[in-house]
Image (cartoon, rainbow, N blue to C red; front, side, top):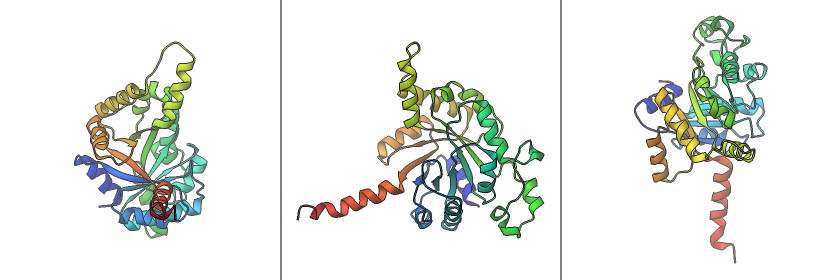
Length: 259
């Protein structure tokens, strides 16, 4: 099976798929992540300083080490997306998916006109550099990319049902940090008030009821992760390459810091 098929099978078997946020440009990080046993790398082109060439190298490294490559793009812009899609990633992550229109734009940017989308034709690595028939790829590409919508604002939460109604939405991810900031700002206006924990649990409940895979960011405390799984979470981003290195570097010098 392909890496994305393994990812989906793991969730279907009732196990949590696990991954790492990647910000470093060096693709060795993605290769190590797969070798270490993670199921995906979250290649962050929204908050990370990654250019297209670095993204491509991460995708290649992830595939070779057995994990999925999910690219978080900065915006659902089909003009930006097509070059990333032509690299053959396993999935795209769309931040600030606030309504149905945003979800439709994201999905349509991943699909060719024959399937109702607006993706431009020009696959390269996605067709094994031309060793796979281009038309065969186009005709079978409709659901090839795993499309992940981030809910991280009050607006996105209030429009959750219409976002999930969009054909082609493959997964929902709760962006708890930005959602918390959005709730804080919303509550300051007065009127209806939201509580982050209640909103978080409600999203879990509603996404689970739809049978749509749900992802969250979390730590690696075993009991906390088990609680998330009970809430209906199917996949977790549970580490961060920069913080892993920083924490390890600090831990290594701590015993001799005062000498």
